Length: 437
Image (cartoon, rainbow, N blue to C red):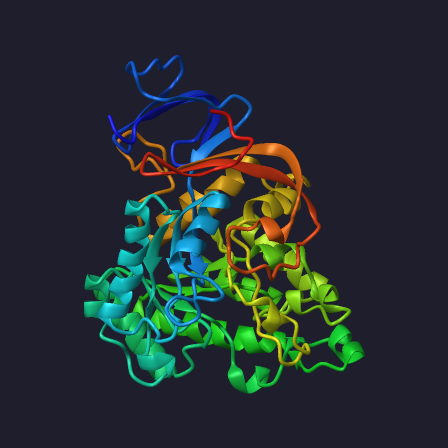
């Protein structure tokens, strides 16, 4: 009875079935067999005492940078997947801005098979699904061969790291991807407006003598893509929404029935441009940390469901790169191992969301939104689960990360909620030192 176990007495939260109660979860051969009370399970299978823990569908992150191939000193498929599992994620989507980019079937297949290879060797973490490039070389001129990329395992297309700037290309993408039932993910940035910018445009940038990126850089592309989605009927998903204008545009578009969705990143929920003071490169990201009004709008968008899911935009960088002058340092932070705790602290503790709602936005909603397996504990579903203590306090120490990189603005933060065990297909892929047997 490989990949079989009984999780006993945990608080089972499963938004897909409306469950929030103390239950037992029986896993047989990598699938959920039963969720109920007083489940004994067959003799001989491992029994895990889940009392005091939340048992939920594994978290899903549709926006992760793994850096392999081409920048393995920052992250690899193996270390990124392990980092994800340590954060409670059982499925992650790998962005295509690697070197070379994931713009042909061989490159897409490599990412998928490399994750499977490490899993077979007992060193796997979360499932890794490759997202293919929308344009050849991420150059924004010629559309990739989407059919072949999907056949190789691609679950979506994007030029993330670069916007899809040509409206005619974006239109063709939104038309063509409908044949394969996949979304177009958009890094919404007007490069003419943001060129040379390194942080949010505003009083803090002026005080620091840094060039700013205006809100309009994001909002103008979001507005354009909404109209293109309405024109074509395609699904555009706006990555890492950071501005109040973009939230409102998406809200109005959804009210009209447009196939437009968006994600919120934990750093845009928790931090503002003030974190950049002192020229802190660990707070440099794109889109940048915005004003308090923007932060509150993004939070409210997630609370209201206008932004349907949380995604980390996990972007590892070597410490020497982040030690450069602020203008020269790369954009991006790591986020897989802090996302759940930051969101509990920012949303659940203040009472803005319940734990049930947060699990919905970090697991059930992204699965539903993107049409992928996961986000549920229904009988017969894949046994991808996370067990975490929602009350355990801990201090973020980047030195303990499974990721190869340490670039986080949350270093030293006192946070609440700690992952104890992550199970992928019935196999434990992460177990903390304090997890119950």
